[in-house]
Length: 311
Image 1 (cartoon, rainbow, N blue to C red):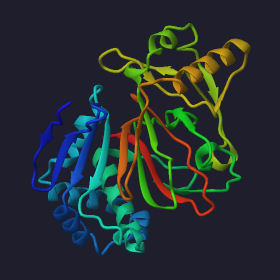
Image 2 (image 1 turned 180 degrees about the vertical axis):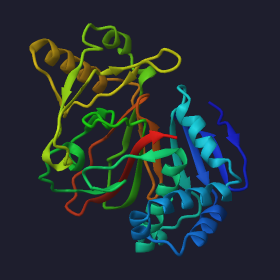
Image 3 (image 1 turned 45 degrees about the vertical axis):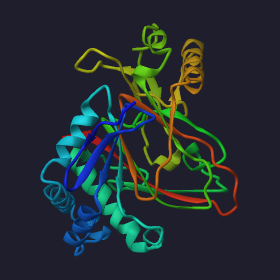
């Protein structure tokens, strides 16, 4: 498939050659450097302590992009046929990725991007509007999030909280000694068995959802697997296998069969992220996961996550 490409002084947009639904937006080296210079008096602590600064740096980035980046992000994320963006910066060297300044800059950059598309929810795991977490060779946590040697199954975020979770931003901050661990994506409309499970009697039945202690959410919530339809009458989904709590055999078997179908879906797409790059997806159109890593005692990847509601 031929890539579509939009030219702009500050960024380019193209369609991924291997996944037509995924849009690849690359910020030019020029806009990256200009943004870095424009926000150099701010640091990570300042945007944590002063929420209005998050909107200021978002506006700064958008102005440098001729006030076109924010609308482009939102148009893609609202579009049912796409709804997923890989955002990268051009001109980043291997030397850049080894510096502490690189990490701080990328937290600021992802914050600017998230505040162009909406308002991040409080992440209860971190107590902030974003969460940082590491994946290492050894892990004793109470969920699959940090476990390197198994596939993290396809899911939607925000299933166990009461807030809406319209979008998810996932950024790779740093990594070393990593082989494998690619991000996995599946668009709901590409799932072969969608109609089978969407038309099932349990599709709209309220189920109970909880979470382990590490998530710092002390309540349970209820909602169906398939939420209200989008504006075109198509299904939206909110599902994760780890945190749904079936109450009877019928629910348990429906969930088992649904999970087996998702994990065997051939339309699942694998994408490798460079350090500093980020995936942004419509959480109700896309399921995401992570492939397993190859064992290495020095394996280390640090990730940043933000998720929230649209403007």
